[in-house]
Length: 192
Length: 301
Image 1: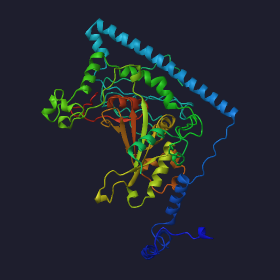
Image 2: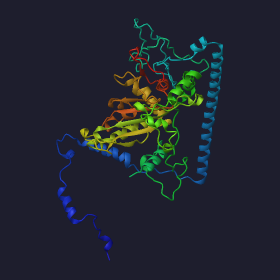
Image 3: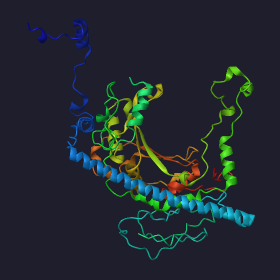
Image 4: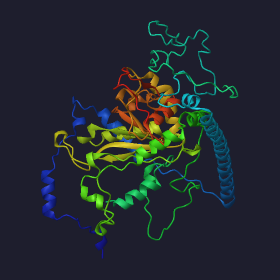
């Protein structure tokens, strides 16, 4: 008649008794007054746990047929734009590479001296530390008119005046390779 | 228990997830569910809502770095051939009898023999072209949390920290072997890692280069010897570096445990030299060698 209300435990009575005896009934360390483990740590972990694993599932937008059409159109247009951009870049690079290769082959025919000096060979080349990656807005400290590059002569201790307090707080690492030169700036590039 | 094949499947599908938290990806494909909703719809686990700002680093790479790298990494055909042959070189096997493998019909489908002296065979690069210009593929951020041995909850701090930094949900790393000295057992959750690519990667790189690295104390750059000889460069950060990130600096008190972490830059370069060249373009400093003698020489290959 009311069998569905009598739930049978998966564990037998004897095992349950054993478990009840073995479990130590004591207060957690954090709640003992004057304990080293402050309660603050436990609550922080609880909060983090809840944020990571128990945040409610976000409501996904319910899209109508027209919404779906709009979404797909925009998605396709964006992907097409990216694809065109990528193709443009690839073509530009391919053309540059072709010219570079042709120039190199021509140089090889001219003679060994020029050709060998043109190859990078065993020179170690890296981008200079002074190079600035373009930003949307100009720097807060403005342009440093008193900047002096580090001289290759180690006896002269001419450090550049700190323009960027974050970057120039420590001295720039001295370059061990003497014929290192910063890469020439492209005159056609728009400086930002 | 996930079987190996299932693990790979999940890894491939949810590898570069961004906005959707991991708990929503627990859906496993039922036998009657042959395909997931398409990736461009928000229902799909691999849906990426799109970039929310301009990616300074990516734009810089495409506009400036790629052409410069193409010129700098260009090799004349002779040296290129030498390099490819060096990588293709097959080292002598341990047992001489293996050399008669081709003649022996019983040895047809056996695995390739181990090389003598434990020599590695590195990947063979393709012929140079505008498509083989070194590019930053992904960044792996990994955090090993020792305190998780005695109390698993310390992992949460690491997971939260990595998620704040990278904007991606990290996965938990389990120990592969046990070390009794450290009370470590096998298959114990001991750390967390996250792999980021695309927009989250470039924003992370931007934060690192502009904010974190300049403010680090007593740090002179990545050692020039860093690298796995195949273009991937790694660096480690102390726990103090975590507090320099703007995402964590804002609510520093909410993190119970500050952990150190390591960052691995995965590039498409086939040599450490090219990988370093690429990263120096993104303004990541490297310490030069103090000595320039025989031991101090940097190998270009």
